[in-house]
Image (cartoon, rainbow, N blue to C red):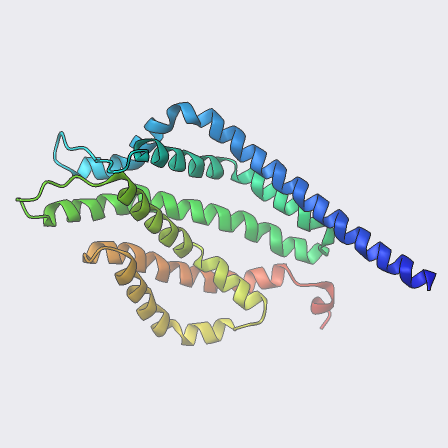
Length: 254
C-alpha cells in the first residue's frame, strides 16, 4: 500500500515540477517580449509609419490615413509595436520552448525538432518580409489605380492593420509549406511519391487559396500561388534527406 502511495506521489511531484518548469519558461519568454516592447514604445508611431509606408507610397502625394476611433491612434501603434517586439524576442521565446522539451527527447528526436523549430521560424519571417517588400507594393498600387477618380482614398488605420496582418499570416504560413511536407513524410502520414501524384490538385488549391486571400488582381494571386507551388517542390526535395538524417537507431538497423 505504501509503495503504491509513493508511486502516485512521485508521479504527482513530477507533474507539478513540469508545471513549475513550464511556468518559469513562459515567464522568461514573456519578460523578454515585454522588455523589448518597452524599449520600442518611444518609437511606436515611427514603427506604425514604417508599416504604413507601402500604402502611403501608393496613395497620391499628401494623402494620409484616418482614425475613426477615439483611442485608435494610440492603440494600433501599440499593437504593431508589440508584434514587432515578439518577432525580435523570438529567439529567446524559441530557446525557452526548446529548453522545456529537450530533456524529454531522445537524440534522434532532438535532431528532428531543433532544425524544424529554427527553420519554421526563419521561413515565417521570410514570408512576412516577402509580403511587405514585394506584395504590398503590387496590391496597393492596384487598389489605388482601380479606385474611381471621384473617390478620395483615405484608409482607416485599424482596417489597414487588420488587412496587413491577414496577409502577413497568409504569406508566413505559405512559406511554411516545406516544413509541412517534411513533417508529413517523416511521420509516415504520406509518401513523397503520393504527394507527387497529388501535385496537380495542390497547384489548383494554391491558386484557389490565393484568389480567396489576395485582392482580385492577377499579380497578387501569382505572388502567393507561385511561391506556394515552388515551396511545395522544395519540400518534396528535402523530405527524403531530412527523414534519413533523423532516423532513430532502430530504424537504421531495419
